[in-house]
Length: 142
Image 1 (tube, rainbow, N blue to C red):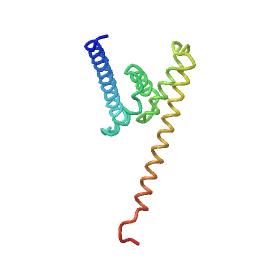
Image 2: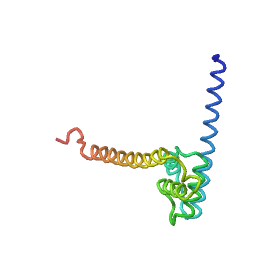
Image 3: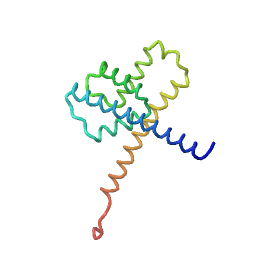
Image 4: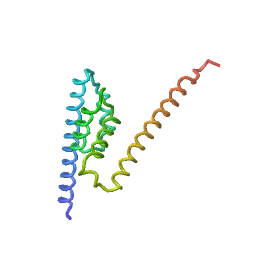
């Protein structure tokens, strides 16, 4: 493969990824806006960023299914974990997805565990940083 064709292939892949990210982002913002109207709550830019990080592994189509299910299931504004659980519930009920292989199910469950572990690690790090700030002595405090 020539350098030109390699560059073109790389650029095409980058464009495809950007388009996919834009579609995901647009879909997510649309649903967060819908949730905000349904549950009469505002959504900050920071919250949008947190939802994007937590749900970035989903395709735009999976995100749509998950959010549609969350609208049906949730009594309150759904957090990312509730959106993921709504998607899992959909897959569990769907005859089409009942035939999916065990490795996909294991990957899905492993992701939930990883997300939970990452959240615990983040909270521990924040607590350590807060403790460091609280226990830090200023010069002359001896």
